[in-house]
Length: 70
Image (tube, rainbow, N blue to C red; front, top):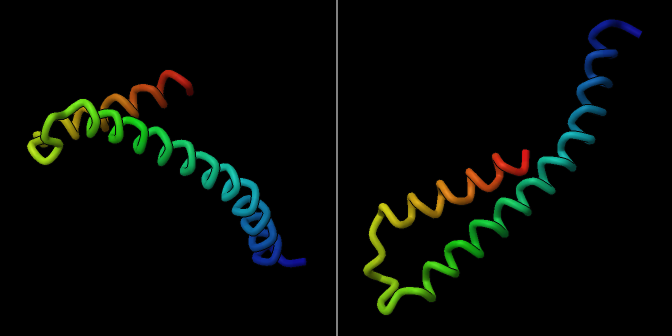
């Protein structure tokens, strides 16, 4: 087996294992963002008046929560 073939097999295995983990992480991230945005939506009298800064705060909240879990 050549080095190139070994590298291909190695990367194929790595992408399979890591790909599953990334998909799981993506699902968790999506759920956290949805819950945070849903909460923001329902706490507003008029959600359409939400400021950009408030959306930025949702992003910060979710990323900080993920960092704490790391």
